[in-house]
Length: 238
Image (cartoon, rainbow, N blue to C red):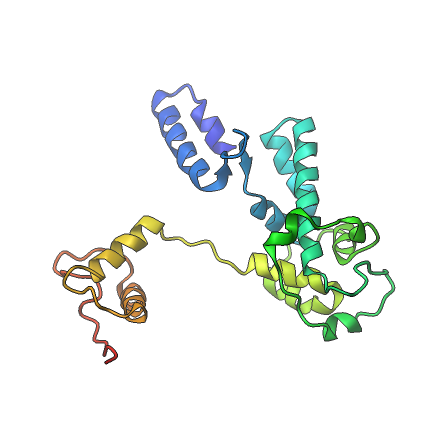
């Protein structure tokens, strides 16, 4: 929203800067390949819903700011449909997918974590989650206090017995960190290590050289060093 306001500024310099920043932002956060419809990555909407400080109410508020009220309703419904469809894949097969509010939580402690398969998402029947599920119970509970300090992964880990399969799904989504290093920079550094004079390194040795260099000195280029990581001593395998 700040970038939109900046792009519409009457100040020419600010407007040009805002448009440039908005293009960069949309490159990484916006999907526009399907039917020329621009929509934000659904995975980030899932992450917002699975944050007990925000949930669906916050997602609805965000969409209302980005779209008109009617489109916001459609977008929220679309995200919830996909989230429920994904949740079905985490439910143990061969067991009743619905969960009573008063049911024992011992099954969640003893049941093995199910494998997740993306291929079945398009054909999965959603009728099994029409009754109270762990996802429904989580969404119906009030949001936590926004002022509270919360480690989201710790929250889902501690509530594994309560939410069962939903906690597995949440942790799978939320544990993936967003990199602060552009992919182009990573490939550039790799190219300086695995060059035409050093083209027979084992993959694990190249990885060690890149990570060791970044741990010791960060990613700043050093003119006096011909190749990043070349000063690191590492015994290659025979």
